[in-house]
Length: 178
Image (cartoon, rainbow, N blue to C red):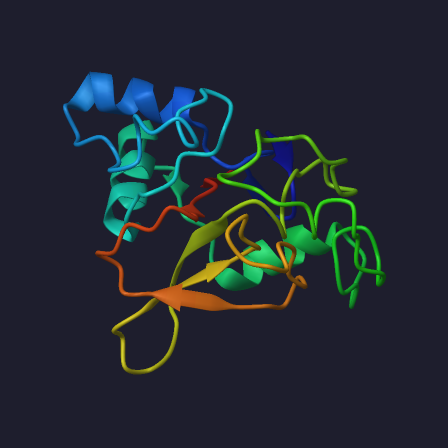
């Protein structure tokens, strides 16, 4: 895990192996896609977790751990380059963006950004702590998705879901203070 800004973010999305330790220690329900071949590699990001599951994982880690706010996530995704469209600059990558996939890639398969953070705009949507809008019915997420035709998003792209839903392209990354 690398220091991103005043807040630290995990270098990678939380993996199946990391989440398995949480499930084993707490008895928390495993994600619904856990045993499917396209989703069970220990080095893939855990998917099928609701926002509540992600918050429970952070709480299990300790009081300093949480989901990142959208602004923190976006700042970290840019890797210190203000206004960059993508973590690596302004030109979209096509090597990852157009390949067919049946599930998320293993974490850290693409080069990291300048802060040492992997997969910031690709692989899975990442839950954030914020509500998406004033209706407070959907939680914000950031990042791309293996499931979409265009698998990479810009640093400023937003998505959202109701917090109780568990989709096969939703995971998370942790943040911690001090």
